[in-house]
Image 1 (tube, rainbow, N blue to C red):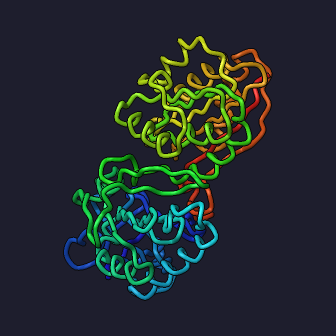
Image 2 (cartoon, rainbow, N blue to C red):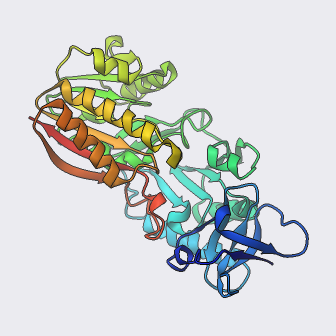
Image 3 (cartoon, rainbow, N blue to C red):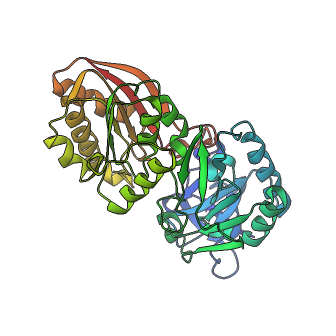
Length: 391
């Protein structure tokens, strides 16, 4: 096993439990020959004090993903134990009305690089680190034995996998996909596009926030921006909304949203589905909406994008607040890791101030319990949101 020696005074984050070692923190790598991507390594301080074991990848800016504090090789037994612990956490989420959730959340479940989502009777698997890729088939076998899924579909075509030098994968590796995959969430049905959809096919991390919307959408005139497959739109209709405009720049996403509303027997008049850039749509909107949802994609993928992203978040929130009907409700979110909860709140509060309107904070929102994060890994706390009442 190779030794990764840190620079002086760069060991504190690892001692505190942070799972990443960046390239700039490394003094030298000791070992025979050039380490292969995903090779296991011991991480040491500048004084050669042992810190933990992880896996190394020279191709990635995150050189080491920490796995354990014990000075022993990572083995399948430990991975299986962590999988079992992760699965036990989700038992209370799944029931007759909800059969989809995230089962394993990478660093949040102390399994760096492993994401598993449950969609009805099947699973979607993402492996995003070279170290976890080495256990790929053992993980598949473990999931098959523990859950007896109808299928396991693998997707490894995202940015994280690319940074690790992993080949793109998009195929069924166990069982067979149903012709049309439908899931249940709080009694509603949604079709999941595993092959071509965003993320692993559905935004599972907004499950509890979609349910919260039902408390505010009854009788409302709703605008669901960045709607994708219409999750918030469907919940607005379920609450008894008077009108819902579903807005997305992707016509394919809107077709999926129409299908999802049809599955739940909600209105799907063509005029309610608007293929448009959300920024432009809100700036030109003439309707006074009593409820608006802003759930945009990442505006900041890296810390260098933070300033530009902040301007984008302020712009979109200012436009929404300006067109709200009196006592209107705004659900606003950011899923950018580089924008933390404090900064996001500051941006939204600045937009409220510039609007000249009185605004109340009703809720601070985050990701649900099936998307836990390691307390030492703030980057894992990526989803943040606010529910505002605009006077």
